[in-house]
Length: 275
Ligand SMILES: NC(=O)C1=CN([C@@H]2O[C@H](COP(=O)(O)OP(=O)(O)OC[C@H]3O[C@@H](n4cnc5c(N)ncnc54)[C@H](O)[C@@H]3O)[C@@H](O)[C@H]2O)C=CC1
Ligand SMILES: O=C(O)[C@@H]1CCC=N1
Image 1 (spheres, rainbow, N blue to C red):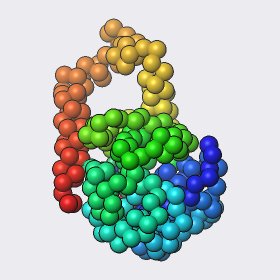
Image 2: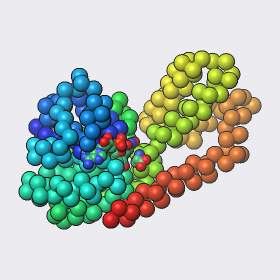
Image 3: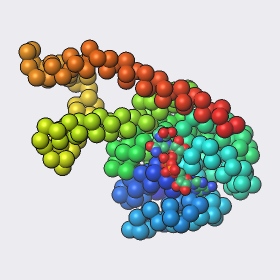
């Protein structure tokens, strides 16, 4: 990609570090990446070999930036933007929020100008290993060039999906933003049982995580539906059938549905919680 823009990440926490790590590994010029945090302890978690620019002063980072990635917690965003409003209104960087729930209109308003270009994203932590899945929405003040750059940016760390209706980002949060944790929960449970069955933790993780990667790749190929892929493993009278029947008869699908609905509803709530 044309790496000609300076990007400032405000809030160098888990999500920002996942995206930055992905960008650095894909050779985005490290001198064009800034990351901020209030404490030095947080900044120290950024690997020194990334050689990016760090500061505890958001204003210093924003002043250099063409793109400002808002990566603090949703409840911190209002105060962060209020303090930076004068420099944002003056420099008009493209704002890219990763914050769950908070609408683009709210972000522009907190930043002091309703006509600011704001892109709202919902990435996920596998961005760190180049396998991120990101949902994107652009407000009407964003140019096609802004959208193209952000598409390319997220393409360096995985794939991305634009939605035309901002409300759909709540669903993206339930399907991919929060979802690595669902798979980690499943792996955690599988590894615990594998250990009871006699495997070492290391072998169990090696087997189960490779299985997760393989299943994901097959689903992504799209040659068969996920239902067909599931059925291909279920030999009649065999072992898989026992496990799948147990899952399905004991409410697995409704459990997944209810968990995702809870995630979605929390995202909706967060849209108004921090006004
Ligand atoms: N963790 C995840 O998997 C995902 C997180 N998100 C969103 O990313 C955002 C950040 O989440 P995490 O990285 O998980 O949280 P985090 O707590 O790891 O990171 C937030 C960082 O912001 C820093 N910070 C707090 N106040 C600040 C200020 N005034 N100026 C500069 N830095 C400040 C904190 O030191 C902290 O390191 C949230 O808005 C969340 O909704 C979105 C998608 C996935
Ligand atoms: O749990 C959260 O609120 C954030 C948003 C998506 C993933 N983590």
